[in-house]
Length: 465
Image (cartoon, rainbow, N blue to C red; front, side, top):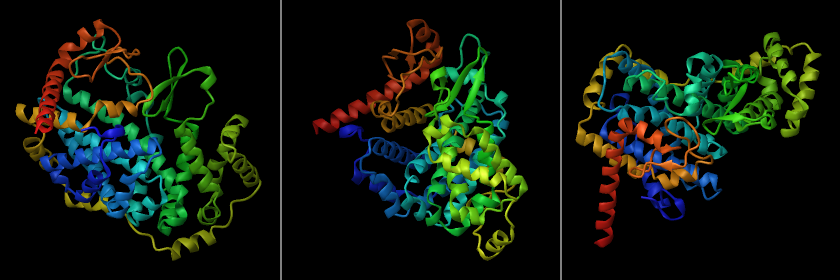
């Protein structure tokens, strides 16, 4: 239920939710208790974003720190990642065609929720420090996401279809619900990769307060500066399509860029440059980074991108340009000091992901079959109950406060001014699009309408009593 001032949770509710959070084993993902916790984490996430966006007291972040639950979020994130890579892959390979893909989608979305929540609270140094050695596991997670961005093949993501937000129902060949879910997973994963970049940038802000092994892991184990240079050279959040239109990925949406905005720095692009500035200009990083000839040549590629227009937007980059000019005239420093530091530094080995992989090695297909039978093939009554809980979790009024741009038509992708009068969920630009979409939307709309009606009746009973 929506609270006063657009809040999702009051502080006392948020604290109770945080305190109740527990770790779920991989085999329990998708259970009713797991879904109940997902709903609580989603509400905490929405409230955390709302508080941060209006610069109010970020009590959700404080509760996670006070109750030492930041580590649990990281555990949950890495376990869900393994589920997506291993169990979900087995489900896709099977011939499973459920009545609804909603439960499966919510598990996939759970990982995105956790990344978003961590992105919000890890902006603060005290949250990063509370994670302690678990931060190494989160650094590795971000590294894997950055590798996906670097290795991304632009031809694999149905970019023009994504621009519309939905499939063109007239032009596209019919696809199964599981095929559509697979496409949704790819879109979610791209958004998580971009948010992981923000997370990594926050770590570079707070390196002095993190375990020594974090700096070594970022600089030498994963060579993150090298990855960031590749992202500057070939940014996956910038795309061109036929007709010379340019799009950039801004606030989890692809936005067409007009000529006047072509050189305007986006938040994501800024995160890359700020992270590079910290990793290359911080004296501790310079001392510990094993700058060999290959790494030096990669870093020097940045000079071509440090234009006056960019430096006007981020003036600190002028200092980095001067450093790169000096570096170009020098030989790489001797590695002896770096090697000595790496020897004396005790490096913690991330264990969360490896422990889950080891525990279920060779059991992925069996686990997928068990979860299909137990969790992901709900009855009609269970589907209605899940829809009711979804309505209770996602208040449309609150979510709209977080959306800056106007809605788009579900069918054609044009700017929309009308929405479904029954469920208030889907948007359309004209009646023809709504009529065209109705056969596909009807079942979900009926579920939403029943859920909203049940919720309103319950609230009226509560008020009258």
